[in-house]
Length: 207
Image (cartoon, rainbow, N blue to C red; front, side, top):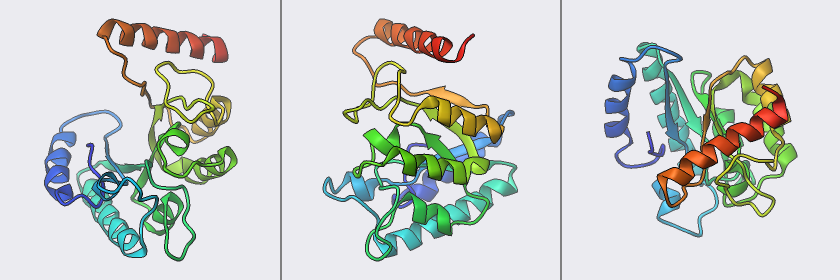
């Protein structure tokens, strides 16, 4: 669900989504974004305030608890927020996951730390976060962020190497991965980009 924790219609969308998700077999995962309209409506905003963090934590906890009652795992995706605030007036992903309950899972996006967050993340900091919460990962968006911090249309070398990311995911027994590629102009190009991405991964990891 493309909705953030603090969006005014979060519960309206989440309640419909949870009813639909509960019908499906499989990993039984339900996802929302962490950040939402509070960032979209303010292009200069780079982090949550303390009040926003408190509200986001409360909503995430309630959503995760509700999901668990119907046999679903609720996961939150990192996005435009920083990986970490200053702990006084600004807050980010570290503070969110450091305060939510254990029912709240993590939906990793391999590029968002670098090409979506409004505060660029050092690869070592992203790695440390992924390692800490690997046991709570529901699935992964496989995205490439180039050295100039732009999302790419084809999976290629990422700012945090996929060798590292996949090793962490494998150790955590998290097998679910979905491509997320920047959108080209045509369907034909999208198909070609997907094929090139598969070939890159085969070349890098074998298969």
